[in-house]
Image (tube, rainbow, N blue to C red; front, side):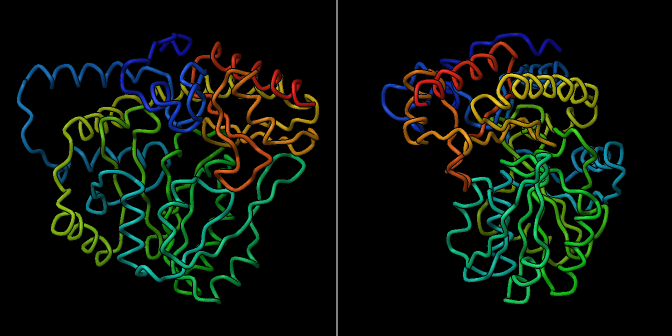
Length: 384
């Protein structure tokens, strides 16, 4: 795969490129965007070939997900890539990961229940957590750029009545990949206080250290929500999955999906792309990770230490969580300068819980990453 290839995404109804003004305001449509967490890479040729072949068939009636071809592909991906054994009967389809989380929380703890998450956190979590009593645990960064949780605070939260823990592994936006020992300690606390652990693993394939799915440790209190779409850049095909070992929870999930929301008929391209990706494209993920690591290394080399910038390579994801608090700049002026002087659209950390950071998407050709780096430098120089 030539990850250096520049592909024009404008005019394709692309959220990141065609609708910049929705996030950054009027007059920003010509900025170079680094915002939405999809990539500017063409998906693997095997997926493209399968989609073209299926399209040529010409009939697109109702489809099914509940078959071994689909569930077995997911089962084998976890076994072969993560040495994690799952039962294909645990796999259920969902339209998207956020829908899965929202529905699971509603079914498990009700709208007035108490939920724990880490912060900074993905803004999509924040939106669906509004109806709940939220208990936040702050992730703190050490001098080496590694983020740590506070298990004493977690236990206090569990004692106060938290009944569901929403984890992200790797974490968006900070890029933390949870260690086995950390997950084991968290799961032990979940068992002690009767807490369900929902792990959003959609970024799991993009990592620079070993990833441990929670189901490798526990199948009584843990479940996973994920999708192949983040890795293989196929979110527009639709579809995701949940892995729910608990029979009662899984039955409630599927019943709600079918009989309440009438969403059990999947898009054929979502099902097909997942099967092809997981069955045939592991090599492509390895190449992608190598390329993304080099992008991260470039950003670190160019920005880390630049007028106080802290830009370190994340353990996972293609999102860099860049710290500007030591730059001694006004962040509101800087955000404006990114647009006016840097000519780049980069997400403010404020959306995720830290106003002194920016979240830079490096899931793109290196030539585009260089545009971001130069834009950030110009903006900083302008406001110093």
